[in-house]
Each structure stands twice: as structure tokens, then as C-alpha cells.
Length: 504
Image (cartoon, rainbow, N blue to C red):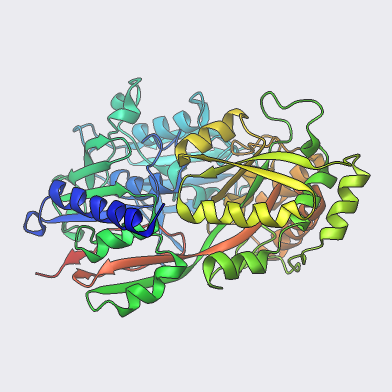
């Protein structure tokens, strides 16, 4: 695309947004997202961007603060039994769902059981330790566990703990008309264009929320998102590109907010999901390791991200106390070639890689393409919309896929679902009984001194098993109009709207 055409595309998007969105006087906050979320059902959803919408739409039993500590949500307080196998929660009184249905212990029980039993629920492995949910009174539930689970409370701060109106959630079209109890209720959605939420006047904590409407606008191109922010057609956007940081800092109308994130990006290998040919080379761990060794992660960071990102070789970000001190392997093309030869591959290896259809991901794909070619791996980039990429990944309709995870404060939330044999997010169907055992053992204790050695073993084992070639950890970089007051960036990258306002 020529520079003139590129500029016209940006200006066209700016004009389109400006024409279609209400003015500030209507108390509207417009938030730019890097892609369109997938379905708006917390039990079936898996996109990072959907979590932005759920943060406003669906209250959870518990939440996290900006220091990633668990704080009350719809549960006012909680306590553990002496054997750590029963979690008792006291629920807020007087809470209603957006359709008027009452939130109580029966509703909480329904939601947790739905997360565990709904066909296709991606929350099953997150809360698989739950054996039963008991209603002790209208405002108290007891969650009985099969085994102690140090990660459970943190899982309930996210989609596994989201509370939906039970009667609405029983309907087959719930994802198209979600009903929760958060500060904002679902208004409308136009696929690939916008999601609109409206203030919920009966919200239990409504004084903390200051907008009549929230509009989420999926714009995959970071430069187009920034153009809309600079033109005043977005108030806030996530995902400022590293190359645009200086532009935001130099703009007197804008502010930059950033925080070290918990999330990673990597390459998921399809080992045994769907109709993988029996002779697919990536079934062999040596081929996966060779692919990883062909990549210079620090060069990737410099070329695409101006040195602002951090090269990765594991799921745990450097801000996590569980980050394992294993050096990121240097690029070794000769060793990669030797591993391929050892695996019986003598000619060039042709490989298909799914890549999200945004310019930054495409640039990463092109850098990987150039690097792996030197080891005899020809990478064919298959650009696709992000939600479609995740669908294909989940169903096994892929060979390699470039995707990541936004990270969770508890280490279990960043690895168990992807690596455990029965994990709901294990899209490559990697399986190692010893790794399963370590991951399960790490759930049994709340003591970091007991958990850390187990995660050390997992991370070190994955250096050779290589079910995912981790590439980098992402900082969370936000751009906002200076009229937006009270914004706090969280390490999990999610925009919380409590306390946010627009200066008049």
C-alpha cells in the first residue's frame, strides 16, 4: 500500500468514527480495542478484548486491585476451612441482574455449575478442583473442593467468577444478548464495528461510574487507533504501538499510561489436535525446538518493538514472583539445522502459520519468516481475523499459530489450561504425564516456597518439549485524551471504569 493510500485509510476511519459516535455532552466514553471480541458469554469466550467488555458488563465474585491483590466483588468476604478444601463466601445483598432477576446464593451456584458443565465451557479446567457448590443461606455459598486449590480465588476474579442472570443464561442466544449485573448493561453490537453498553441505574455501586454509555471500537491497526485518538474520536485506547509511544508523548492533548504486563505472545504448535496428519513434522519435539532456535528474540524485540518488550521463554512474566530464572536461548541456526536433520528432515520444510490480521502481528510474522528461512523452514503466513484464528486453533484447523495470553496474577492461570493434558486451552494437545503431575501438585499449596520448585521443573521441561515457543512479554501501553481523569493501568491490561470521568 502506498503512503498516500495508507493515509487515506487512516483518515477515512477517522471520518467514519467521527460521523457515527455521539459527542462528549452525552457522557460517552469511547475505547479503542485491538480486535473484535469473540462471543459475549464469559464461559465460552477466550479473547483478551472480551475481558474489557466483561469488566464493565459482568461483576465477578471477587476482583483484583491495581496491585493484583484479590478484593471483594459480589462476595463481600470469604474464608477457607482448616483443610483448605471449602471456600465459604458471603454475598452482597440487594444486587439485581440487568433484567431484574435477583442475585443470590442460588444464582451464584447456578453460574459456577454452568462454568463446569456447559458444553464448550473454557472455564472447566480453570475451576476443575470444584466438587460441589452448596447454598448455605440466600447470601452464603460454600464451594467444596476435591483437593486444595491455591489458584481458585484468583480464577474467580475473571471469567470463571462472572455472574450472569440464570434465566437469561439458559437461552441459546445468550451470547448475542448477555445479561449480567455489572455497572453497564448490553445495548447493541455490530460485528467488527462496535459494542455499546448503557448505564445500569440499579447497580449497587453506581456512584463510582460516571458515563451514560461506553462504546468499544475494535480497530486492528494501531496507527488507525492512534489517528482516531488524536482526532478526538476515541477517548482511550489500549495497545499503543511501540513505534508510536514518542508520538503520544509529544502530543499536548494526549497522555500515555503504561505498566509491565503479565501477558506473553508465542507460537502454538499443533501436536495432536483435529486432523493433524500422522507424519506432521511438528509432532516431533526436535522440530519444535529447531523452530524456536531459529528465532533471535532480542532482534525481534528491537526490529518490531523498539526494544520496549522483553524476550520470553516461558509463560511467567518477569513481574511475576514465579518467573523462572532460565536464560532465553540465543539463536542457533546450526543447532536448528542439526535437530531437523536428526528428525529426518533433509529438504526445506514448508510450514503454515496463522497470524492475526493486524500490521504489528504481520510484521512479527515477516521477521520470523526471514529468520526461520535461514534454518531451512519456509514460513507461509495465513493472515486471519483474531477471533477466527482462535476458533481455528481450538478446533485444530492449523499447523502453527501466533497467539498469546494476557496473563493472570496467579501462575496457574497462565499455564495450566494451556499445558495440562486436560486443559481447555491446550490447543496443541500437548501431553506429558510428569508435567501434569507437577502442575496439579502446584495447585495444592498456597505457599510460594512449595509451588516455585514445581513451576521451575515445568518451565525447564518445556524448554525441550516446546509445545509453545514463547516469544516476548508485552508491556500494556495505553493512550488517552488528557480530559480522561482517574485512569489507572493494571498489569492485567484490563480497563476498569470505576472512578473514570471526563473533565468538562
